[in-house]
Image (cartoon, rainbow, N blue to C red; front, side, top):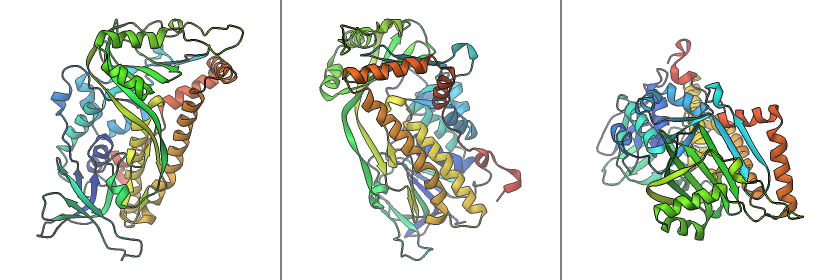
Length: 447
C-alpha cells in the first residue's frame, strides 16, 4: 500500500474521494472504519462545509430529506454513523406507504404499522452527512480537505504505464494529490466524470421538485403519494409532527407554489391530496374521493423556506476506468418519485468498498480497470433496472387518456388485493441488501 508523504510537488494517497456529501463521506467512512482497509490513506475533498451534528440536530427540519431503506440503514450502522443519528431523535421511521391515482380509482397500501418493523426512515440529508462526519473525526487515515476546490483531475490513459497514478489539483495548493484511485462522488455535474470523458445518456423531465416543510395535526407513520396530471406529490413523515412535501410539477406551477404565502401553500397542498379532479373516464365516472385514501392527513402550517430543483434522468455508459470510479449521482440520477436516489448511491458505496477490499486480498492493484470491474458489473445493471422502472412509472402516470387511466387504476386495485404482490412491493421499499461484512471485519481475512 502507498504511504502518505509530502514533497514540494505532490502528496501521495491510496484513494482520493472527490465529493464530501452523504455518499462520498460514507465511502470514506466505510474504508476508514474497517480493520481490513484502515491502513489505506484516504483524502476526502469537497468545496462546501456542512453543519456539525449538534447544529444539524436543532431547530426545524432542513428542506432536503431522503428516504433511507433498510439496506442503507445497515450500511450506516456498520460505519457507526447510525448511532449518532439515533442520538438526535430525528431519524423518523415510516411503517406504511399509500399511493393513489389522482385521475382514476386505483390505490395501493403496503406495510403495516402494527408490526413494529419500519419500511425505512425519513432523515434530513444534512443530518445524515453530519453523523457520518462525526465518525470521520475519529479516523486518522482519512484526511478531510473541506472546504477545498478541485481545479483539475488528470487520469492516466489506458496506454499509460500500469503504475502511473491519477493527479488531483486543488485550488491554492502548490502540491498536487497523487492517488491510485480517484472516486467521483461529486454529483450530477461531476468533474471526475467529465475529465474521464465518460459518455452520459439522459434527458430533462422539464419538471421541478418543490420541497417544503409542513406541520401536521398529529405525527404519522405513513408516507403518502398521489399521482397528479402534472406530477406526483408526496408527504414524507419526519420527527415529531413535521412532514416533508416533495411535489414534482411543471416549471410554471413550481414558480407559483414558491411565490405563495405559507397559508396559501398549505391550502394548495391540501387540495392536491384531497381535491377530486376532472376525470377522463367515460360515462361520467368520477375518481374516488382522495380523502378516503389520504384521510389521516391534516396540514396545519408551513415551516421555513421552500425550494425547488430541476428533475433529470442521467446514466453513465460506464462507472470505472483506469484509476477512477463513479458513485452516486455522478454515475446515475433518477426521478425522486420512488425516493431511491440516495439508496442507490449508498448501495454503490457498499459494492465499491467490497470490490476494493477483494482486490487487496487477491493482490491486485485496486485502482486498475480489471480490479474495479466487479463493481461496475454489479451496480450498472441494478441501477439501470431501477432507473428504467421509475422512468416507466413516471411515463404511465403522466398519461391522461381514459384507457390508460382505467388500466393503471385496475392494475393498482388488483395489486392492492393480492398479498404476495403487496409483499413484493414491501420488499422493494425495504431495499436491496448491502454487503457490510468487509466493513465490520472478518478475522480470517485481515490484511
